[in-house]
Length: 166
Length: 335
Image (tube, rainbow over all chains, first blue to last red; front, top):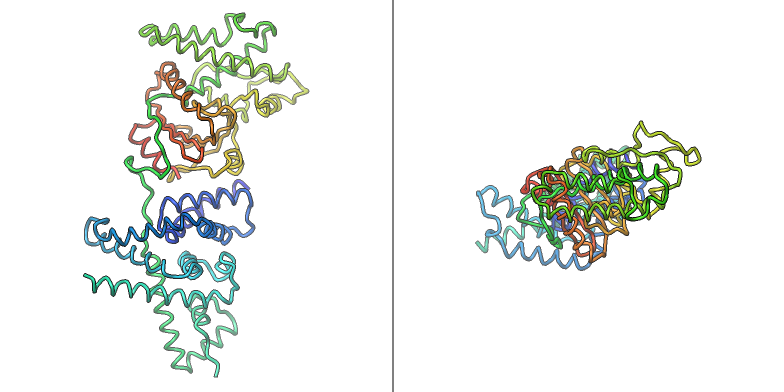
């Protein structure tokens, strides 16, 4: 089990932190949640680790109401800070701005749609997404179809508003 | 006429349709311009959505010494060699066991020790060291600390099996840590108590006795988590070599009533100790320990440690033979 856990950690920690960061917008919180997830894996060794780890991690995100409030505040801060928070070359500026815009667009999706997108971006197949999110496999395609469309539309709306404002 | 739903089109895009289902949808798309347009639109959405998600930059782990995790509170930063000190303490413990086991029980009484008792020998070392000659006032502190170790040793002895095997002595601080690793008894140990099953059994029994902590033992990661009572933090970017667990008394300022988890990196060159504690007096003890350690182990000035606590009662200490800036950077990579 030790070897398994160590292997799990090395294999999934970075991915888990990435998904959690994209889900929460807070690197420190993502790290903490990842640690907590692996701690739970120790207490309850998962049979099918990959979807289990991400299901637990995403459940942890949802369960912590106060942290969710903090995330919303942080997103608001990101929007409010805008360009002044990311000084540097134009390329870096554009990347940071785009990243913030995508995060804001993601925040407009439902939890299920958002998490399905994040897991798909990490290479999860439909079986794994269904297990991680508690969905029927047949519903994953529909969920992704809706989530993709909404994300793109929300992002385009944001970008349109930004251009008009500038 | 049947037309596939959007979810089916996305499943096709994602390679999730197989066999007849896939053939059926592909055949339909060849004959239905409307659905083919929907499919192309779905593909564009899928590509753009994936691109957008991947555009979210995940910031690198913070390595600057200027920033800290929320909740962290720096409580001290000193250039001392406490890790080597605890190694010395563990070594003295074994040394003491070696000597005490050979001596009559009456010799365990305070103030009635043979000249070869480790405390006396340590006092001798302390009073003849160059530093003690240059600064005689420090001897008192050093001797007090050694005397404290002697008392601990006496209590250890009381809880040890009466006819336990001889344990190795520690003559040099750097070697003492290996000897303190009770899970790995040295080859030269000569078991003399068959009822205990040799060195390993004796050490195991003594380790299980909370009143007689002997030293570190290597555990699995999950055992470390269980001992700590929470997530074991790691230094981001470094691969742990092993996880050790030992009594709180082995760590300066540690809560003596609880075990401490040590994550070892780079052959022991860097260690991360962590312990859950609500002992408010531990901080004051840490300061005293620091003073004593700085005097006792001044021969290893490059060994540094940095300690902080979280509000939930977890205490962390990073120790390494590295520069102050590097050590501070290490602490910022603890996740």
